Length: 415
Ligand SMILES: *Cc1c(COP(=O)(O)O)cnc(C)c1O
Image (cartoon, rainbow, N blue to C red; front, side, top):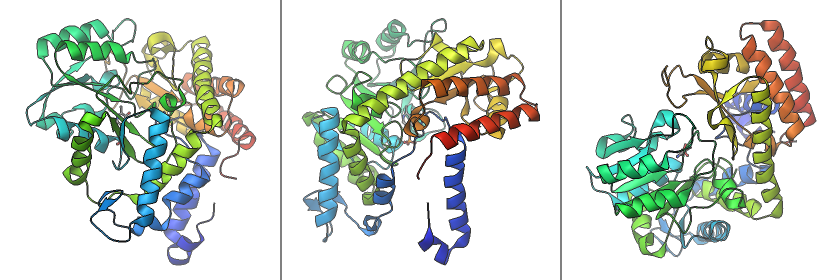
């Protein structure tokens, strides 16, 4: 990828940009929240719409000159509406976190109660962690996954809701390998008169393609990130029914944001158009098939998987039994030396800490975008096992690095 215009004025940044493309091309991106957006999406995101102020919404802006901004935003809205079947879509949130903030700001008062999944069990900072303003402004209690099975403890959640009487229950997670039963969480919310926010940040693409059940039409609010499985460029989205539409729009702008990132909204429009094509459904199916293949191959190598497998795009490996002396951080570092990029992650019943967790999380969205199939995932699992079995062994790392090179050459990116 050339960055000629950047190079003309700023060789230092041009070098870094080219090196980043090289890094993505020549190593395996297995961070479960990442993907490779298409050249079309990158092009839209790098467009002159970055110059345009378009505070407001299509047809009712606070600035002139919004003809094309309106066109682009309306296309993004229409396509998202078609993809998800939502009554109302707001495509302006700068990111998934801002999408969640809009829901809280629209519906809650300071001190109101949020019931959300514990971060070490797969929840997200924006669901009420004390380090996030959400955890400081609202009263937050957390539910957990079942320690034995690794599945959300739906009964425990309902009991906890009856006790705590939350104003809103948050579902949708960052490190949860199983299909989420939206209806059961909705029932728990209905029983206590709570709202339900389903945050599909990780699985937005899987839901759009119909390979994961959709919370749209079940939960009161559905939020997502647009750069993860749906690979539409960095950003967020909120969906809701007609009844809450005005509240949500007002909470996004002017409630929480200023001018929308119109260039990113153009990326969303283009990415959603791609996601409407039949090939995207194949992509989403392959992403899940690859995660299952990865999980099975890792199990055969003796790794223990939280919930013993996966229904979606990621596996969560608990290293404590198979590799008690190797932390998730050690594994992450050793794998990166060998060209495999993923993250150390907490596991349910974490006995270490978020900074030095006991597991690793591995996702298939980005590898699937560049064409990896189940047999490639077998090779990837072999590579992961060899490195984690000998995290200090430089010879193993260089052998694996050579295998990674071969996989990357066979599945080129951004040609
Ligand atoms: C990734 C993620 C988000 C949003 O993150 P952003 O980086 O702000 O897009 C929100 N919720 C969950 C569950 C996530 O995994």
